[in-house]
Length: 366
Image (cartoon, rainbow, N blue to C red):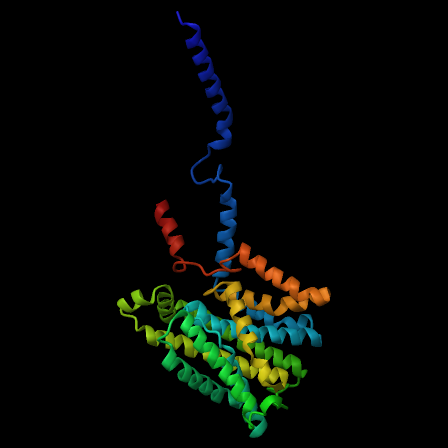
């Protein structure tokens, strides 16, 4: 016969088995269904968003949407703010090549912006060149500027490189402020546009700017995915290891710096045509800081993220005009909140090669 302790143990065991059997349908499911994993649905949504961001159709879709904006709202204020935002996107994408792709901390990027604006402004106002004809000279001037500053300094790293580039940006601004043929403190005025082509002048400039910026964004994205882009990422992660693997790190960094300089110079041409007047205060250190902020806020090395960061930095102050004197305080608090809760950026760069994860998943399933 069984004593009382044995009967009690058997009763407890049967009660436990009954409880498990009652809960089993809620916990047991076919493999791969995701039941019992609360984060599965969230992970699937994140992967879907990531797939959209790396889609080859995202860039053309956004470019078409930008080109169609005047057909939706052609107000003067909207078009002017949109042109400012597009120019800022161009600058952020150019700096992303230097900082995001290659990991070179550049605090004087506004220097190339100034070189492009002053070169096109001088040629168009002093010698009467059409603004389109100044583009090859602007590109050449930006390359020369990149050679002058990049040649002796790109062997430096981190903080030392940042200090040198900061000094270069200030040298360009102060030089433009003290030379007579650049207009001195008064700058240049009466800079012509690209032409109206039978349209309203600001809408024609918007469409030209949207086309140029869309092409630059797509080119930057393709450049980052190519062989040179992979070399930039290797240098960014570990320069010594990249050099040990046979990458000529100096040339790779030099290529990134020159590419960023060209982007900044072309943005300067668009800025000069948009403002019709430029002066040295237009290219102070605040520009470099805001452009770097857009790259970090959006996600270093991520083209969609940098575009999103640039749009946020350029448009949020305008959207917050209703807050009047408090708008920059609210703007700063929003930036702090993003950096606290999203330190990797709004749309961070994906790790790994595109399509590698899908092939790995299929291989694991087979």
